Length: 396
Image 1 (cartoon, rainbow, N blue to C red):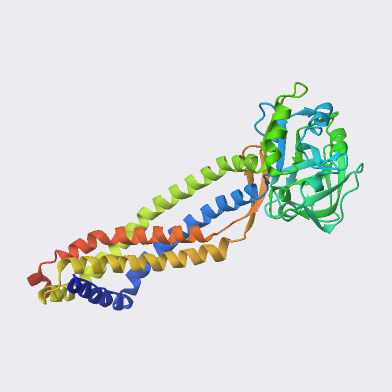
Image 2: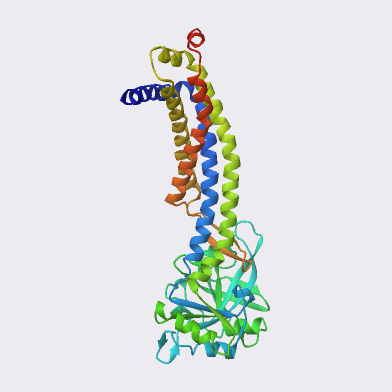
């Protein structure tokens, strides 16, 4: 066994040392594999970024109350008296006699993107004064908070960066109202940063919604209070609602698009990977052909055929690893942190987020590169082991 290991290491070292002599053909395999890894990692980083934006929004200590049967805020509807009943439920955090809960309205406005000037659906949320107490992670980073009862609005940092007319001091036209942007806020990178916030009562008037809302977001006095809060509301005949933890709601919202992106990304990578494997096969066939006499000489000196096979596979895997490292580094430099937006398939509104090239993605890309290199070396390795020694020694 030790003799076989020594033989394999010796032949592998010889193969690796001669790679610079075949730099052209080796570069074809490396570049092909690197390209596949760039595509795989970059596409999957979209899913990671979108998922992080959605999941980073929710808190297990907040509960979202919607109309029974609604699958999103867009399809929900609650009237004013119902929201008053909801705020009376046990389990809500209270400051004095006031429930820390915000009845909110959700509409879509049409704004152009800064980069392409194409229009996009931007979510506009009408909030109540308690909204900042419900979401303590939200803070104003530019300008100031809007004044309730006016046409002032504040924009999330991601929305301000992605869409036109949402910078501090800008004005936008929506519905029959002109809105003044008086502040920009952030929310630890969560979904609210993709939104524009206004006074819910003013928004009701502009869109002729009467005394209606779509959701109530409540901050619980503890995570353990959720069951008490939910059970009281679902058994109350005054309201017909469903209650979900906020983090679970947004996790479910992200699942459809995340799965779609991952499926597309893996499918593209598999198709491209097939091409990269053929590139590796041709590269390794060229390497075997150029070293036919060397391999035959080693076989004549008593080197085992399996050592030759292992050495060719090892060389092919090294080429794959180099391609994987280059591709992973390229994807990280080019895409990590890149800001973009896409449509939330549940609400048909834009969600702004940043690509996230995470360590697991880089490791996955490297493993895939090694797999492509390994598969690409199998047939050339078998051919190398089966080279007839006498005829190979006569080759020029």
